[in-house]
Image (cartoon, rainbow, N blue to C red; front, side):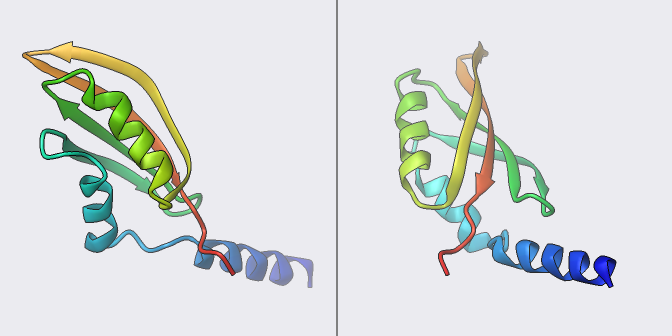
Length: 103
């Protein structure tokens, strides 16, 4: 049955994404230095997309944090929409796709 095969294929794909655990979230937080604070907004388990904000009082922390996220091995995609400045903090909105583990 084609639907059964499709469902199994979808289950296999979803099983390939890492679980969003406290250890994973801590690893994402630790990619930044102590002046970066993270606010996790949403997670879409169907495609492994994690939405979160990173904040810092120093603008130079932003590109450094993005490079760290790109190189930490957690994400296949790191996308952001620039940053804003308000109340002494630079905020960047991130949309990152979790990398499936290597088989």
